[in-house]
Length: 208
Length: 208
Length: 208
Image (tube, rainbow over all chains, first blue to last red):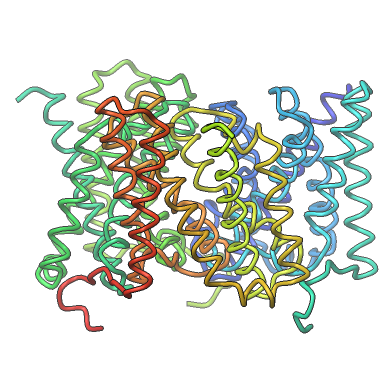
């Protein structure tokens, strides 16, 4: 399989895992099947849609690709019927989520660069691509976005991956290699942070 | 009156009823007049604005039409002075809301098709047009969007209407007839669902 | 210093103060450093980004200007290390916030007029520019947007300033003078309202 083929497959895999996280949130909040599908679609596609609207790439990719719409539907069906089993697989879900995080921060940064944004702003949009869907999921589920307070390393690995992507693209490296390297870096940082319980700091003086 | 004239009138009527639902929510949440007007405008115009941004039709219709801005103001004034009476008319409000739901899912789908989206994505945007304003209303009012969990048939009738619209347009039928038929279908389904308390399912194993 | 230079400086000052308000909210909600930076950026840039997306000026100014991204970072660093001291300066922060409100309602209205919107819609977007970031801050922090219920005069001074801007521009006055006058008016109204505890009305019959 060629590089673009692999990227497209990973892309759909990332969307699937993000959709699973949205659908599981819907179960926890006792939503119905409509809420589950909407939350799955919003979580999976939200970050990319916001990025595309901001760079002027409309209609966003989610509204031109059939797979992007159907994959969250499939994830919803899975969670609808087998959510206890899916919830037991949570460690695996978190691993795949880390892979999605890595991939999306890299591809989001590249797409922003292709649309003429500066490296600084491309990094910003790369992070937004990776974490935006989760933020939308939490706002729709009536909770403060987890990424804003839970002190896990989630946005920071995405930022590292986005920065490496912008740097590598600026240095003229091959985009496939840059994407792979940056995604692997963000993925590894995220997994290490989970394994060793690394924590981001709170403002000075705020008690534990 | 000609067909387009009727559609334009129904359009404003739908916006009025959506605005009333936003203004009544503001009363329940003890907001002031500013919150009431903002919630009325957001509920009435939110779905269409999101659709227009996503298909690249900017400025959105809400920002080029005077009526779209003034009608929610009028609805706010009505609710501001006579909200107990309006609340007593809730059954009628729900009927008009069902009519707005039907109309907006059809016109939203058609507009997306006109901008070159596929039938699948046009249906998605038709539903978003119909339910987006209510989602925005609930998020701004600090509550989980009703459409995500209350198990009423609300998004599903919109989806049916949107699908019939896309199918009819694809078959080359006259758009006025398609709009009328699809809106009537979504309206009827919504009203029947209220009358007979039809419920959407929750994920398997989630207790009542 | 020339007029445009002064406006650019005030612009960054307004963004700084809005970012401080976002970062202080993050402290109150016990967020970590990631949440603080995200909330600071969203509060400072949210209103302008929404305006730019709605008028079709993409990428929005926040995604082409380096200062717009870095100033909220600086505000976050300040609040991260010295938030007790910053919180003690709250009266001064509120004054600067009123200045930002005045400036942004005027510049937002002008930018919308330049993109061909009608005076009515330009006023709407001027208000959205001024209050949109605060609304996004509150939604992300899990609270009902303050501007919707707290009965302070906040959106109303912005509306006055926006209306004067649209009127002055329509009368062909010099834009620098219009901006200065409208911003001063909105600022003064806001400060007087705080000083004399002016309150917006609640709907008739809602108890205090």
